[in-house]
Image 1: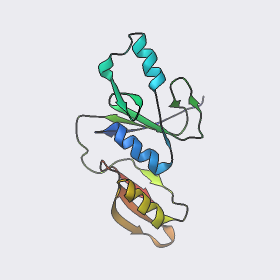
Image 2 (image 1 turned 90 degrees about the horizontal axis):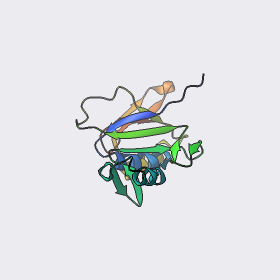
Image 3 (image 1 turned 30 degrees about the vertical axis):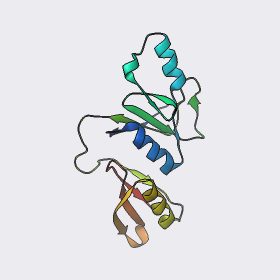
Length: 149
């Protein structure tokens, strides 16, 4: 048996957070326009469940990013590999994340941190554990913590 997975992140603006993470990770924002058009045409999806953004139709409250080299379904543009799905929830973020993303800078820590800040991330705390590693704890635009090493 082969297991697959996706990371699901609660959000308040799924499309905006997907755009941030796509830029941060050099991923691709999924474009389910063709699937949504087919569902709308068949009457299987109400128009109120659809959001248009940057020329793409999205399922309202959801947006996803995928690694550009991983397999995906061409009919839906849904990734079948490394994928993060953002889903809107009514409650705001509270407390520290119990799960977070580590971004590996490839030895370009300062440049990667500066690029992420230019996309909307904020620095929280620099950590230096000597031989064990040196990294930054950062927050994405919605306050989710992640590390850059």
